Length: 102
Image (cartoon, one colour):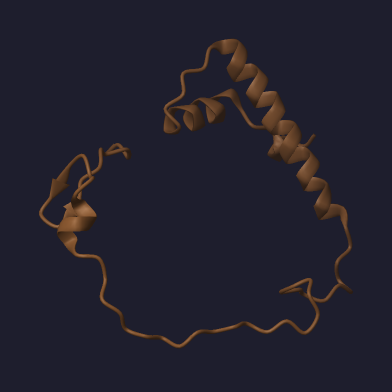
C-alpha cells in the first residue's frame, strides 16, 4: 500500500462527523484500515494498460439515446409541495444547516 492509499484516522473522523456518526477509537482504527485496503485494491486498476482500449459509452452495441419531446405541462402547486415539509420559509423548504462556517 502506497502512502497515497492510506486513509488516516483523521480522515475517518471527518467523514464520520459529516455523516453524523459517533465512532470510538477501535471503530476509527478499523475503518481506517478497511478504507485504506479498498483504495489500495481499486488503485490496482492504474496498473492496467488501457492505451489500445477505445472509450465506451454503452456495453450495448449500436444503442441510441431515446429522447422524448419536450412538452410543457402544469407542475405541482407550491402549497401542495410544501404541505408535508416540517419547516418552510416562503416558497422554500427550510433544512438544518450542515456545513459549518470556519
